Image (cartoon, rainbow, N blue to C red; front, side):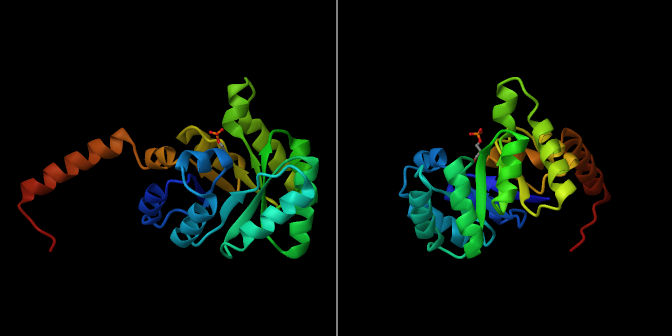
Length: 217
Ligand code: G3P
């Protein structure tokens, strides 16, 4: 499973990229606003930090304007992925970029039939929002499961990018049901390393090792 960071915090991205475990980064207009920085500058910096796919989202709502914005964003770096909303116009723009060989991430996906359309439009990634569905009393993971089944039934190559992830249980379940990618806030990535039994076990090992008086080096 590929792990992307859902962030525009370049310091945090650089820190976690140093683990060698980050395959890409996703951003959205909310995260750009949170950074307080010009979008083109932030995306360029992230593209330098992480060599994998970096999603940069358009702000336009008509297909022609999305295509113009996407073309500009694609010029930032070769690893930019154009993020488009799952609307009629977004999918027209997606089809355009698919024909041009430009990678896309179709976002704000909340239903299996939306995901089917994204695959038909040639999306590189589709982003179902797990957490926001959970917030509304649905089971976000059912959506991932349904999309997996649909894509496997017809051999669609669009990758399922589980988004709006709130905790490590979401990451585990997305991996179990076969999401190709999970994009996670940095705090959730940090939590993935942790287990109280790891801490307890290490403490005991270190204590026992110290009692031997040995040194490996
Ligand atoms: O980037 C899209 C998605 O991951 C947003 O998550 O937490 O705002 O629902 P959230």
